[in-house]
Image 1 (cartoon, one colour):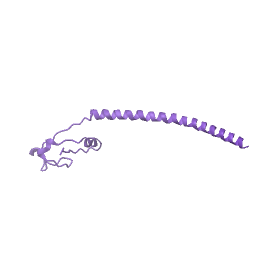
Image 2: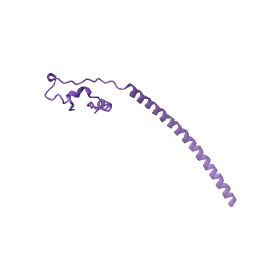
Image 3: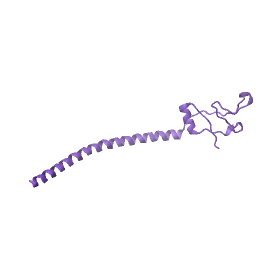
Length: 114
């Protein structure tokens, strides 16, 4: 009787192992395809990002040069409330992060390299 039990247990274990190996092979195929799909999508997104980064964004920028006849009593305060030093107006630069933010919020402020 003990001999038959060991044979049954061995057969059952091998059969169970075979079923699970087959099942995991199916899962492996499913997830391998999904992983490849995600890797392809990731590569496309990286390529788009690189293209945007290399080509940049087209923006129109004008220089503020206040003269008495063109301003009110506060020529050092821009329309958005930014205070500048008038004698350094040509040295102001636009920060890329703020330009990107401006595209979303319509709020563009200038910063200096100082």
